[in-house]
View 1 (cartoon, rainbow, N blue to C red):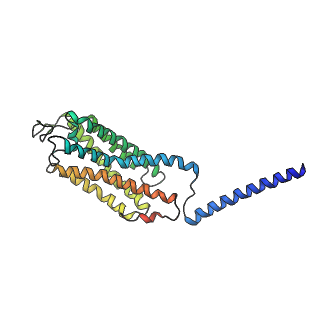
View 2: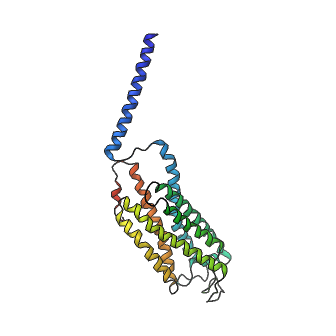
View 3: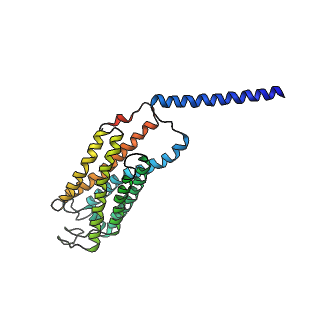
Amino acid sequence: MTHTLGARTHEARSTDATRSTDATRTTDAARTTGVPEVREAQRAPRTTQRGLLIGGMVAGPLFLGVATVQGLVREGFDFTRNAFSQLALGGPGWVQTINFVLTGALLLAGAFGLRGLLRGGAGERWVPVLIGVFGASFLAAAVFNADAGAGFPVGSPETGTLSGHGAAHMFSGMIGYLALCAAFVVLARPLAARGYRAWALASRLAPALVLAGFAASGSYVLAFTAGAGLGLCWLTAVTARLLAGTVTTEHPGRTQGDGDHLG
């Protein structure tokens, strides 16, 4: 029995030594590569977070794609005279209403994803809030329709009148895009902190282009559409850049400085 007990003790010590050696090797590898150790417990929430971020990335292209297809097939719609918001009017308007709701929901999901991605760093507080406000503005746009005008829907007068729901639609859009522009400025900090200096500079310049499109909307509807579309597309691009940067925590040999370019 004494021999058996001694054998078991020796086996237990050998197992502990093996575990200790493996842990030491893992820690040493992390120190050598500069890549933090990724524990299994950390991977489960990351999958959910990645899904939320992808939802936010899809929002802009989805909205623009669905609206563009509608503009091509809806009778009387003119891209040079009518805004995408007017597609929510008329019989088939429910398609654009759903487009507003789905886009808003995806943007809110992206805001939660960015909250996790930026936790503990620059922008962790304000970026999610500002993107959340932007997403909420799409939900408000679904509730308060834009006014008819410029001949759309077919039979509408060329010059429309501003109604209460039309004013609410415009106001929510203005607040939403101002929040988005502010988010771009704030996002420049985490981009720069990760070594993406060119992206940080572009994120500071993007709001000027978006607001320029809005300022010219009175004369050129296409300028308004371009400005709004640019804002959606830049949000997708920045989120994708930040998400791609997280690969450095999973694949040794990649450095965050590899992304210091716009390509």
